[in-house]
Length: 332
Image 1 (cartoon, rainbow, N blue to C red):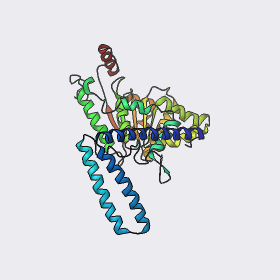
Image 2 (tube, one colour):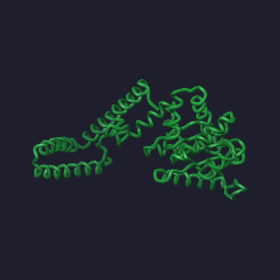
Image 3 (cartoon, rainbow, N blue to C red):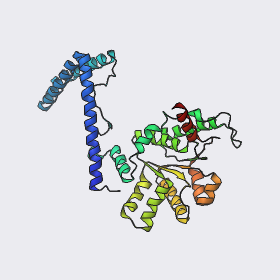
Image 4 (spheres, helix red, strand yellow):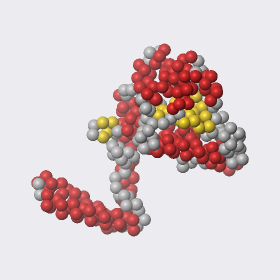
């Protein structure tokens, strides 16, 4: 989907702010390290002058001198790393700071848009600018098994709520590990407040950090965009369909909370089927059980999901959201 001039400028402003922020971090690090270890500043100056001389000699074709300077640079860099480690810093503490090392916060690699730019465009187009903030809070580092009981047993599987949650996390980690090589799909289902959205966000967080494009929609948002393209002939919505079909990961949250009708049934099948054909991964979370999915979205959609998706049934006797709220209240 093409960006408007205003949207493009908004994204580029973000890159400029990112560069300024990271340069400020770099300046602070240098000041701190040089104050603590003055020899580091001497080495830094020597590295800079040696690099300039190396470039000059290369232009003049003096390869033997270049080799000598390369060896000198290696010695200087090694000394810097040893000094940093000896004084409690990481060896790359004085290296340039980048939010995206791949494009060095320019948004482009060899004239092509970087993966981070593509995700920034997705965030602007679909107004999911808050997704990064959500994923900072909801990820595997903050995921807790404390809300799942080893005493609650699912009679259908014989597994406890806790064991089921552990298996679900393991399945999600496998999904992430094999993501680039073999696209997979997840259907995470269960009653309200069992951690379905949280687990979806854990996966999205890992894949975003790995440079994959992710679009997050509630079911209502997804069908709203699809309907605008079909019924209103909205040009932006029509163009948006391609991103929905082509992004690396599409997350459809809370399937079944939208107003279900023949249109949503046909569009869900289109979305599921088209992404399977394009070998793109999808995560669907829903409060519906498998029988309800079949009845609501047709046998052919249910069949495609059962054939191509890993099914994860989370359960808990108590709503995790309520447990968290009670825990917060008791602490305060």
